[in-house]
Length: 353
Ligand code: TXA
Ligand code: MG
Image (cartoon, rainbow, N blue to C red):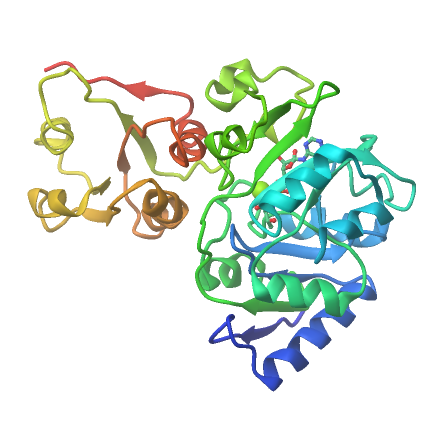
């Protein structure tokens, strides 16, 4: 399949050509085809949420098991009414956090075929804030089902080059909108009957933000402990191996070890002569030899949007191993922790020297 790759230089001010390209993309989706699109979290692989065939094509393009349900994207939170049973809690969440990196699980209506929801009687709803995603959904004129646009087993794409690498030849159109600002997938939560919220996947709308808004919030045990995922998790995506590059990911906890992160890495690699990478703070960069591949970040936000690029970069550079400091689990750190603990195969390394 030939793929049209259209580059949008400034998503904040769309040109006439951009709008024409979005019309083309919208038509493709409305007619049952696929288009990869930027969102503020990660790139999505968009398809009409009303088409079983399009949903099947999504799973095929990704190489993904078809029992993993898709998130349905809307350009206005109220549009969820067309395919989901909208609740007061949803409306409150929408008022506070939509458009934005939040996905809410609601009871589904029959307008959505079972292929989209992996046979579940619920549907995940999200209203992205990215201007390109928003314009595309409007142009499509239908709700847009979209998983992250990576090949199954790869980290979600957070840059145009990632999505071009994964999806060229597999879909008719890719819209390259540059880097995704959040860099990790949306927060997925399920409102419980008593009005409290259960976070199934942490993301850009943090537990703290939800609590500050007055919600009672619990997090699924599997958020921080991948081994707690049973055979039938509430969010089917939890059970698949995720985000793990070919390079070994060493999640390093040096707390109370009397050694700095940089020194621990250097000692662990001493005399091994292998190519390694490291994620670290800017002031640590110069402590590593120049052969090391270094990805620096200043805070949780930067760590979040550097993480997937670093994991892809580790494989691209053919690294044997990449060291990542154990993140704090507050704020956006919880989302970073949730992804990196999976990439590291559930293991935290606490070095002894
Ligand atoms: O930020 C995001 O959410 C991105 C962008 C493209 O919007 N999308 C995304 O989609 O990450 P995906 O398919 O890679 O992840 C969707 C997650 C999966 O873990 C899936 O199991 C869960 O949401 N999910 C979807 N529908 C669900 C449902 N009805 N009940 C429980 N979990 C659901
Ligand atoms: Mg995904």
